[in-house]
Length: 203
Image (tube, rainbow, N blue to C red; front, side):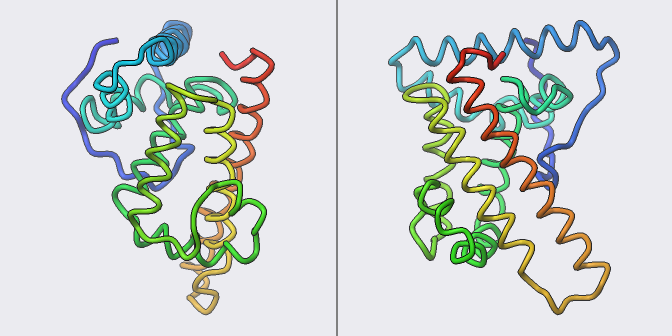
């Protein structure tokens, strides 16, 4: 995989896509690179390697990951990795915003709040630690658990986004609801990926 200089990419939409000029070659590269990274990480007990894998958006750039992974279907290994890294970047860049949404949704989605493992009310550092643990779980531990926790986190946060700022103007409110719907869709996709991984079908 050829790396480029990191280019900032706002994590406003977890389902953003980047079209590739050669779809077949791009698809093969996406699935191969995702499998290599996950296999290498899970086969190693080197903490430095684990840290490098978790820091990919900040070392190779989120735009580079988008070019390789974002066009793949959500319920594939590269699609799942893309969503996990974007989720982590969103939390790293806007932890207060995410914490507000998570808090607003926690009481309405208590089961998912428990699955996510986030204390309530969460502090920004709690959310950073959560996504750190989720990415760590991709490369060590149970990947299906990491995916389930990420899905639960997205579900609670989406619920919060849907109820926040209910008195805002129609345009602002509509955009908030669209963001909540996209995040809820991501939650559903990550749950499906967890099941696929357990069956050995997440590729």
